[in-house]
Amino acid sequence: MTTFLTDFFLVYFIALNGVYLLLNALSTLSLWRINQLREIKDLPHAQTMLEPPISVLVPAYNEEATIAATVRSVLQLTYPEFEIIVINDGSRDDTLGVLQREFGLLPFPEAYRVQLPTETVRGIYRSTLHPQLRVIDKHNGGKADSLNAGINASRYPLFCGVDADSILQRNSLQQVVQPFLRDADMIATGGTVRAANGCEVRDGHLVRVGLPSNPLALFQVIEYLRAFLFGRLGWSAVNGVLIISGAFGLFKKEAVIEAGGYRRNTIGEDMELIVRLHRHMRERGRRYRIEYVPDPVCWTEVPEDLRTLRNQRVRWQRGLSESLGSHWPLMFSRRGGWPGWVAYPYMLLFEWLGPVFEFGGYVFFLYAFLAGLISWQAFAVFMFLAIGMGVLLSASSLMLEEISFHLYPRKRHLATLALFVLLENLGYRQLNAWWRLVGLIQWVRQKEHQWGAMKRKGSWQSGRPKE
Image (cartoon, rainbow, N blue to C red; front, top):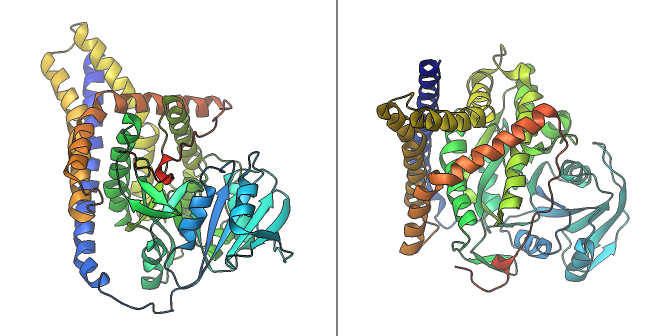
């Protein structure tokens, strides 16, 4: 039995790292192509005025600390035509009051076409200072319900979902819409999400990129680099993206309404929608593309305390479980293509069941080595696969970031990130595996989970640098 488990865990970790290396290679090739075009894109050029108008949807629940900065960041976007719809989802704090004071809101009677069912809308407001800004006040129904309400109120063919604690770069919409201009079959695109902790934002403008001093936030900086720069970019090359972050995604409204909008009874509404779009389009034999675009950046606040971070990761794992569990027919379906035959099995084996095998592997090898059941050579091979390859993959993501984007300008920033690339695999990654395992167990048991509130410090928008 010991030999079987040893071989099983070693083969699993070899396969896992092999897939990661393949995704890394695909990402490197994609970034090379993107860099070839970047010099042309960076040349001065006027707006073509052919860009489709976009509705920016900002669901907000108890976001009084960050909502004003988020709206200002959207207002300063350099895009020909867009509207902003903030959806106040029955906030218990002063979110609506902050919006009224900061942007001069007044009640505005208008036709509200219900294409997707939502909780009751209590009122609609329009800004007297910014004509493109509207606010929907509704009963609490969750983020998915808020987005559906925003879709109902939107006027334009594309909509962009943005989290209420996020800051967009000025050219974000211009970048994320590019695939729609290039390909008529495009139905969704997503940009890069990075940690805003340690940065400085003034009046909705990102004025300085920095690193947080909080160790948990620094670990997440590395995580986000790895998840986006070689995870989603690699899958994008084969139309296999199964996740577009709810913090920043652009969608074809017609396709989303046709698929039923955001599902309100799920935790991971962003991933569930993407998986459902894949399944919906493939079952009908329709041509489509879903793409990740690395250039547009959305900066968001990440947790800085263990309890909030744990709740977030448990929620993510439960959301992943619900998204995959709701769409089993996509896997190995006749028209499944890359999403059904490759991406879905990967997510199932390495992301959904990953915490079982990863945490189980650590426990088994540590026990077997201390009990003398396996040789030190076998233990060393496992540690190399589990920790050494993790360091290598995180380091390669940092290298791709430095070569392609160079967002962290100071040498000490790179030195700090390099240090946390090493430290991440010496406890933090294992802790994450445990939290993900808890989320999986909760999903299996259908146990109700209390998420708790995300603690917002907002120091990145105070005007006081946080190194």
